[in-house]
Length: 207
Image (cartoon, rainbow, N blue to C red; front, side, top):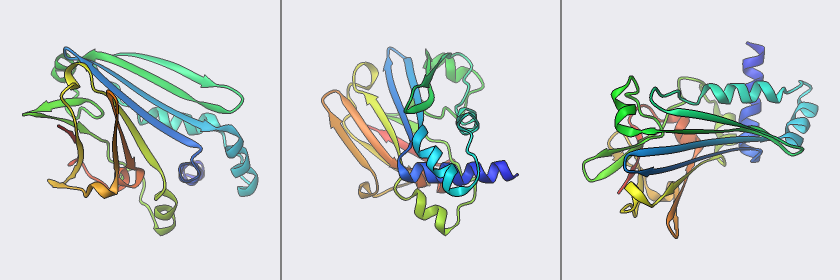
């Protein structure tokens, strides 16, 4: 229990100081989805946090907890690349597979995947509320943390020109997150707090 609490405090601290970076990229061509999740921790800041807290922070333990949040989908190939240098430690997990085949398997949640519904795509995001209950201080710490998503607007996503967050059937005001198009790529920056407070009805709509 002590380790879990320490990891929770460390992750919140890391997120708010910007030394824990999360990036998701998605592309799809003829139903073939390529999904990459990359997360890194800055070694120097973890050492500083350990020194000030009086508790040794094990980067391997932090990254193991991060690994556990990545879904394992039947029908998708998985390649994990370890990031390990003087400044950063982490992983880049690359997944690829045919979306129709993936959804025929026991992957009904479809988190992180662009699923076609009518004339738009839905990307469901995992809710973290069940993992940890946030108090006021934790909320303040997380208020500056971002979850970054990058979409390749070629192939099956070529007609996408906008994105909006939807929670419980209602659109979240676009002033609460950022959507920017750079050439043929769309960058979506979502406050990490949304993933802690949202439930299963939280998703990103691409149209």
